Image (tube, rainbow, N blue to C red; front, side):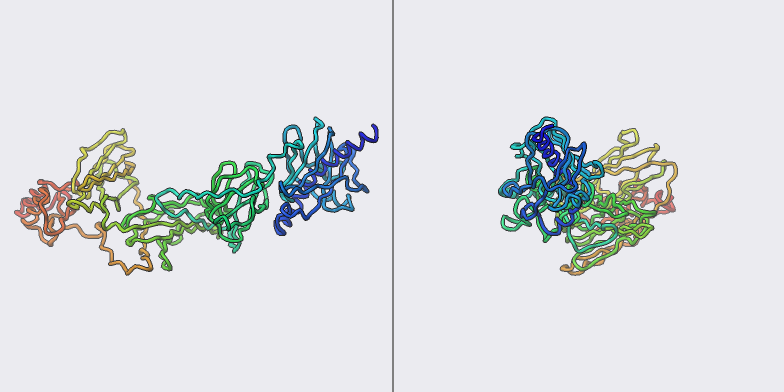
Length: 579
């Protein structure tokens, strides 16, 4: 082979090694780049290139065959390998006087391709090299943006895909978060069971970008760095990280300004963005992994509404759950650490609360999640709303009466009355009762089939505004007693005066069957009260439907009034509901 051809091949080989070694060097010194700033932005560093034909590489004693040039307008280092084809190996280093030192840098375990030009790491005759295969003999430009970025090979003159914009994009105003007007969930992930004062944003580079930059801003004059932002550090696998210097509202991830996301609303410390699925998720490396932390009702809700907090997690051994709620400086524990993964919370005062879900496993690993929840004052609400339904799910005994009790609010218009309709569907999907609106806040039905029963509850105000909600029960041969979730004292907002003591729940008040007017005696006045109630005649005091339903069918009718009269004259000694 002539000297000229040999030199050409040698140059190609050198460039190939250079590209691969740059990747290699990227891996070796990635931490330094993150600590000292973005080297691609300054152009202060010089990269040297050695190269040989990959069939017989020999870098000992050679001098650099070329250097990378920094293009400040495009934001990358490059080297053009001209008119050569075949297989070549290169070594890249910042060390200009010793090829032997250069080849000790570990090769980057990365493969990149562009058309028919390939880069990969390899070991040739004991040397860690960058390997370039250019079968077409085209003039190839090899470029990289920083020590952490890896290499890109494209045909010279066609590198527009890696060119960065000279100006930052104009940020757009993010749309408000949907979902009931609540504040986005704020995670407090525990990284490996430890905490740190440093705040990071993460990107899962599943799209395979050669580099990842983060551009964050609050306004056109308040950003973390000029476009395309700061270089993120690869901390292993596809995970890239950037330490936040302060709090920002918006962020754009990009391939050093090339491929990029839309304007994103930054949800807070500890989140990770996947640039392939285009989704945020919580970045958590704790051995105790949180699967879910939810509420059965989306915020906002009204005071007096029962809200069930639920959570699930997987850890080392048994997982224990703790639920707390706070407002301002006041905090109450709804349920301390136990194996129960749900609790009922019934807030009595309006305000913005923080719900805290704590997790602990048998090995002592911990984790935490928080959720902001808004409670509004429902005292003058026109539309009806459901507060509590008991029971609202679970197993029910087949061929035994099941009594549904409802507490509702709203309906503050017209006559201020609320009406209730109960629709029962059996496991076959057929309606098993005759649904109609009633003033009764309880309803009794008897399942006669094994399987799933559905209760659809409608609550309607006097202006015909209606809310509907469905509940599912499983009719079984025998019911295993369950302990309802514990409800702890409610935290009041710090800026509100103490709420009055909550009245006893209906289930805690003894039933005095027949005493419809609640005066403590069963008399003819109770019969009259039932008649007036059925005729919708205004009553001087609250009508006790629970006491008046002496036949236990879930409705107050003329039959109940007749039974009370029979009881008064001694024809019966007790009511049917007491059997």
